[in-house]
Image (cartoon, rainbow, N blue to C red; front, side):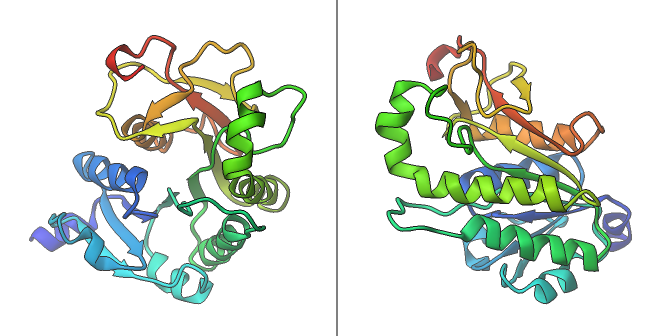
Length: 234
């Protein structure tokens, strides 16, 4: 009976489940009574989460046939994929991975995708703050460039996919903040500087799962952040 009940629940694919934001997605999705399939490179990293509605499956992210075989029967893909560390030379992780994901989604007939990138993915030095140009861009510019190519691919070549791109600023491991996130559609940051420029991963995960429940941000990219007054987390 437990297995039958589990199969009746909406089934989600979560990518990047062993990272900070991905872990939040897994934990919050289970609390919201989804059945979660976490596709990971190293299943041992999720051994600490034991739940009857969680299935952890080893998968090759860059093999769309492998991905598709494990996506069948699911209603949506939530991706919190990231590439840790600084990258001095050019990288292609984000555009390569999204192409594999989209092929797999098409093969398994999944249309809904919610994925995370970041603030400032499009390089616009004339409008971005000085600290971005001086500090942030030299550190993670290669990541942002690859994310931007990924975003452009979704927007220009994936109109058959109901995607939402979520662009947060600096991510925190703090507990969730019980305030609504601010949302800026079709922008790469908040030009009025009305936000904290940092947000708990837990709030990003909650926003992604809330977005799954409605069509407000279909085929859109949104910047998300907390209001400036974040209490102790500010």
